Length: 316
Image 1 (tube, rainbow, N blue to C red):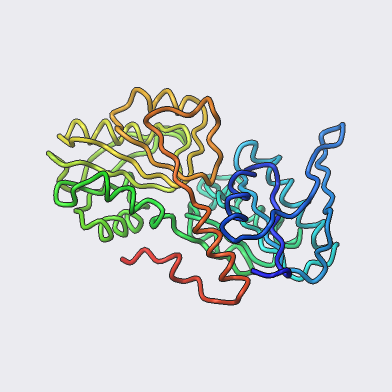
Image 2 (image 1 turned 60 degrees about the vertical axis):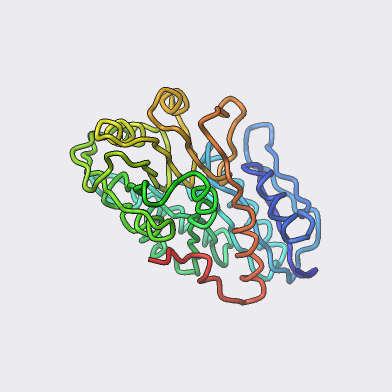
C-alpha cells in the first residue's frame, strides 16, 4: 500500500479496523469520533485526506442507528475534506432484513440506507454476506458483496469427516450458500422447510435430505435471537443427527440468544468478528473467526484496481 491510502474507523469495531490496518501494513488514520453533550455525533478528521483513496470501516451493528450515523457523518466530513474516493467498508450491513415490502404500509429500510450512504459521500460499498443479494440493486454505485465461506472452510475441515457430514440450509433462501459449503467440504446437502410465525420465531415443518447418523453443519448469514437456529438444531437431533455445528457469518446475538445457544443441541457455533462479541456473550460453544484478511485483501485489490471476483466465489 502507499501514502495515497487512508483507513478510518468509527467506534463500532475498532479491533477489526486495527487488524485490517496491520494486515495492510498501514497505520489507522486519526479521527475524532465522539458525541456532543446532547448526543449528536461529533467528527473531526485529524489529518490531510485531499486526493486520497479513503476506506471507512464501520459495521452498522448494535447500537445500529448510532453506528450508522457515525458512518454517514464521517463520510460527509471526508467528502468535504476533498477525499478522492470514499469506500464504506461495512462488514455487517444493518437494516438488510428490511429489503422488500412484504406487508402493507411498511418501509423498505435497506433502500433508504443505500440512499443515505450515497448522499453522504460513498463512492462504493464493501460488505460481507449481504442478507439479501438484491440489495445490490438499491445502489447506483459499485457494491462488492464478499462471501465468508473461505473464513470457515479451513476450520470446518478440521472438525468434520466429509462422508459422515451433511451441510444444512436452515431455509429455502439459503440453498445457494449451503450448496457452496457442501461442494467445498465434499459433503451431502439437506434443507429445512420451515414456517415463519413472526419476525423472531419459526416452526420446522420438514427436513429434506438424509441426516440420520451424520454430523450436521448449519450455515447462514445472520444469527439474531437464535430462535430459528436452535429450532433447526432440535429438529436435526430428533431426526438422528449426531454432532451439530453452525457456521454463521454475523453474530448479532440479540435478546436471549446466548442462553438459547447454551442450552441447545448445538456443539459449536462459529461466527466472524464482523460484529464485536461482547465479553458477557463469550461462552465455550462460540468461536470467533477473523475476517480481517478477507477485507484487507479486498481493500488492497480495490485500491490497485484489480479484480476481486475471486473473493466472492461460492464455487458452486
